[in-house]
Image (cartoon, rainbow, N blue to C red; front, side, top):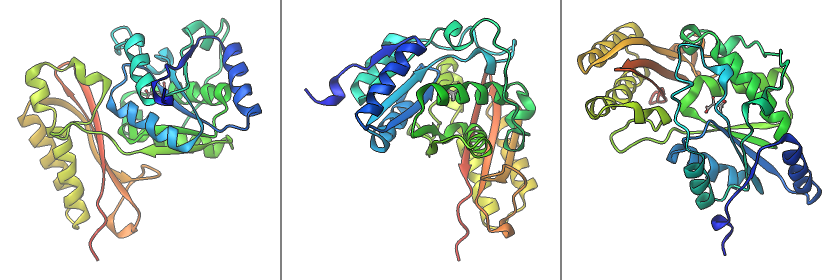
Length: 291
Ligand code: PAF
């Protein structure tokens, strides 16, 4: 039997998790963590395959983290399919599924929250002010629980990746953060657990988001004006039914502050927009200017 066919062990208590991680460490094995909220798709499985190349053992956490959702957001309807997730993980070869119940993650009296600024400000931070504090707090806990050598995140949530890198740097957390490029459908739509909310008509319009930000990226890489490129992206999105458009922005790929081609630094184009009742986010790199 190949290792990939062995189902992962599902662990629900911190005590059992620590015992299993200690066994790996005693055997001299390295550990990678892939934090998820479940409803796994090919994008997540790509993260797990990457994690397998980075370490001898792979832990996938499945935890729909209530502290990163505002009361008006989709916590209650966020898709959950643990059995389906575990079957997919068996096929790609995760060793552990760390799936604590909310009370195991946030015990009675829990009252600590990491405050994140810098990369967390603006963009998603402006529209979901509570969000990155919740993400940083749960990721910090996951890092402390699993003690991974490396944690693997998707570039799909690009600002989240920047915030996590910043937190790890600022708090001297002893692990590496590895970002993995976004996996897309053939028509360009970035894979997301929330895509399943889209109606067939919305699904047909959804790839316009990736196309619009790609066009902005090409324009600004070639020296075109950011404001004009963004305006025409917004117009093209509205024309196919997106709205409101929360932002289309060009940012420094590391700090997420302002970017200009003259800086010589990598840039990123990021966007968030509603399509019907679903909020989609996406981002692409600004291509390097041709010498
Ligand atoms: O990207 C996600 O699925 C979540 O924000 C994460 C990193 C698992 C934290 O809950």
